[in-house]
Length: 561
Image 1 (cartoon, rainbow, N blue to C red):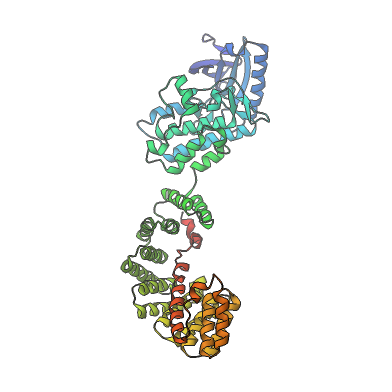
Image 2 (cartoon, rainbow, N blue to C red):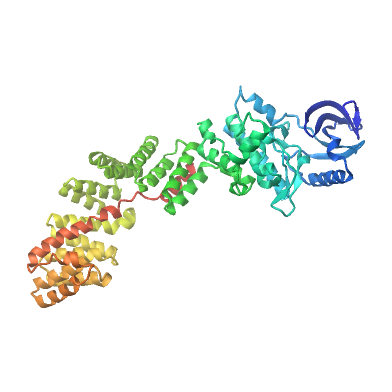
């Protein structure tokens, strides 16, 4: 065959390559001399019977359907002295194998690799939609045109799946890139994905998943072994890319990506997409996964303060405070005037009991944003922990002076905190005013009514206090503190029989027994205990407000990703 000067309407010019199934020549049309093509002459041994030849032409008709920018176009097909041949467009840019040989001196960038993989996947997705699988994808049959775009060759090895998801076939392919099921004589669309995964592995690490092995060892490895993760070989490879490739070469085909485009999309996720996925996971309270997504986004945009901040929020919710602190500090380093990051830094410092540093962080937040109510509130919390009650009350009052919109859902809680600090400092009129404000903002909570009642008892306004405790019980009939307050109010009003009756009913309940056991006949002693107990209960406000915000709150800034 090598002595042939012509085949069909074409003159053979020079050999380009040879392989298991045939030899490729550069050729030109006998009449249309400007038409330069590639002709692949298949070894006749593969089509010895009439049935084989009919199958070849049937396959050729299918290949003609594959008109795609990244698939080597079939121009003609025929038999020359019973030897089959394919005429295709000529790929002038060499093969991926040749490119890989050159990467030792000039490695490909991630962007180049992603473009190559995306073009291959796009072409194979198109073929799969026509129920055609390649079966022998490898760097040798991935070619480039003059624009350096991909042209996938050797679809002549392909088989049609028709309506089946997996099909029996002969063991055919190139062992280094063959899926486990191919070694068992089975083929599927996922087999092509496995081959592309092996190619991606080689592009990114410089080696195939199972290199330097004979065919039997290679078959065993593909069927039974797990290659090292890519980022273990090359730490520069982002973890999400490593994970995407390892999923593509999963031994079980059902564990691979749903399709070719899903595979390359997982590799080529943008920072915006990682951020959006992280926000969705955060909303679902899947903080661990959200933190991973934010980290992947940061690999792509390492100078984005908002993404560092989002990661800090997720880590703080996981109580990984040291890591959260590091994330907030990175955000502040990039964006020094990021008030929310300073506030949240203060909050994790408070959790770490580094109170002076926490105060400095909150102070910086209020310097940047003098209207930052939550930072004033958080300042009050730390000052209260440090037993600086006067300063704590001043901070809470400063928070209440901010507009309700700035406090959001915390508005009533801040007034409650102001109220409890005023009670501690025996400033009962101020406590009363704070709790009444909290009641107006949040009328459906029993706590402000109880606080108001306690303040009224200290002001010797027992009738009004009784009404306030009854209002609390109307909202929550199981509120033990409201029952105790009601008993004390009745004692102060000299209504001892009614007070004892309520006490008997309450102490018979397991829910109320522990606190009711402290009730004595002396109303003043009872009131002192009630104030202390109520203050302890109201301390849980700290935990209600131990909240770092949601990444969704900075969504308008996410475009920076």
